[in-house]
Image (cartoon, rainbow, N blue to C red):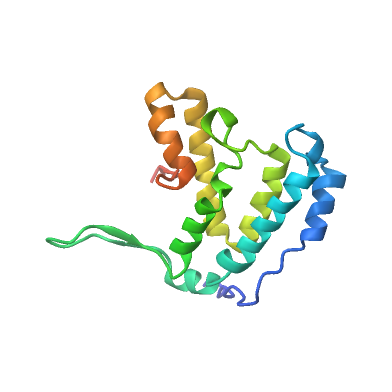
Length: 178
């Protein structure tokens, strides 16, 4: 028999921004990767993501573990829906409202194009708040990168903007041999 899984802690998340800034600017030197992005521009973004993870993503993490997302197949005269645990929809919307979905986007598509080394730190912070949400955002980034490089013009004009503003999401579909 499987051992019981310990539930996620309800303890508040406290991101060590000072340590992440040290990593960003002294170890990885992300402020030297692109002349458009210096420490004065990147440090406030790092703090903004940390505040978001602490206040929006981490809140309700244990509830989300217990409730999960659910698919409602719909009945006659009812629309199908995916229902998320309390707080997840709001955290998702805040991510895009705050502009985080445009961090990795090339300028030619209307994004900020922050250095990739900086994105690793953003990903670390978001995943500390909620691995579930971090995975969803990263799948969307992956889908958009594929479309940027291999999509036709319609995909680039219609789908990519929706991926960057939260109207569309990337997914992962697995097929299993069994």
